[in-house]
Length: 226
Length: 74
Image (cartoon, rainbow over all chains, first blue to last red; front, side, top):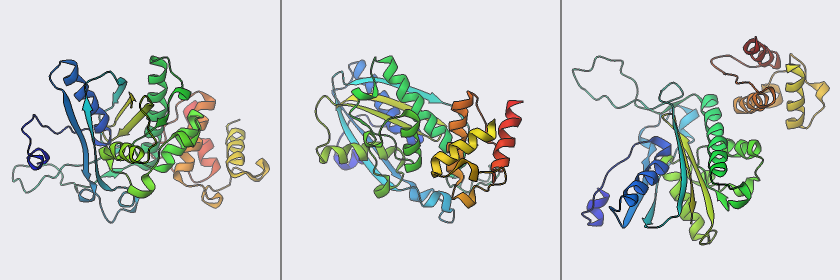
């Protein structure tokens, strides 16, 4: 639809990886660049989570938001490294699919709303941020001092705060805007990057760590040079 | 041992005296919510060098948390 609205005729596709999708999509784009297939790639994270939230479940409906962010990628070597972990299952974060009125479906009719086990999600998310960022730094001979900002998926302020404690990295190094936008899933990182860019926080050459995590369960993190 | 570690972590977090924490202390009374309990658990995992699954255990008091951790250690 966006391709249609922009009046383009390029290859277009959706990538579904829940809250980690932005980083999964950066990785996918990197593959296209590596094969010399493209000169520019538009990566968009767009979510209308208000559609799939149970508005009577206080544990989820207060957290999620609708939003979209995008980046335009060009050729170069500024996508430094990435790491991905997927542990498939739905017992921690569950987003049942809409079954509709198919007469052939014999399974249980689940409500098509996000359901999360809060404590398990918290533990998974904090461990993902800590493990993935430390792994990437070690693989690339870097330390947190080399990183200008950590721009995490904006899932929950408590997750980011505790990751900061566990990593012993000052809170100021983490960019946070969840207080204004909520958890916009795959849109959260590009929305944050755009805000930071407009505020003049990012200079050419700055190293950024982008850790994402969420449904899957999946986590994905990358280091980019702005 | 586990109780002492929990009491020390709680005292540091709440900036209170360790002696005010007992086995019967309820987390809710301390203003500790479910994510605070997870933070406590994860700090303990790091200290004890062991993985502790929360599962469906109800952890409302310090004694509940001690029992859960000690049962995983055995």
